[in-house]
Image (cartoon, rainbow, N blue to C red):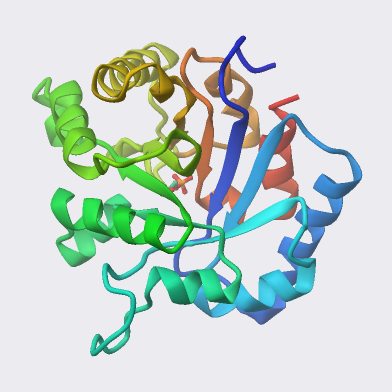
Length: 254
Ligand code: PGA
């Protein structure tokens, strides 16, 4: 059950650079199961951009599973070889886009201000943005977790952010793909601090912004993580690649 007054939970799968057309069967299996037995959460899968249109045509536009993208350019169109605009992703059928994932911050040197511009581009194109924040192992060891996360949050979330179309994912970098998970106490502390900062900045409406936890979420730990106060869902990497595992996490929402 969600906490009273809390926004509806979101379980979002991030396939990263994984997936071929044969894997549309996984998306079809998840959509089939979610459509048959509606769960107590919204469900999204963010496959690589090559599979967005195919996913949407496989499961249909109004399917129980929304399709999202993993990154976008800040401009609507233009001379940016290899990039995709938020408008193009929306045109392909995406309803959301992840921005500022730690792998993009790391692999491509993305800064908070670029991520903020990407979140604005997403809003311009009518997409939900899933804005990622999270500390590295070194920052955590130095006791800087909260300072880093709150700084990223302040600088990555646009001033014009709307609660319905803004999702924030707290993903400790050391927990991504490692099997190490933050403790419920750690997650509660960071999510509580993020909520307080968002309410201070945007007012009461910020209680509607969904705060996801990400980093080695799997069926066996999802229930515990999802029951932490101010955790409104999960961003799931590795465990979203198999329908059975992803559905196990979705069912933890009740
Ligand atoms: P993981 O990835 O679940 O494989 O740790 C989460 C993410 O990077 O979004």
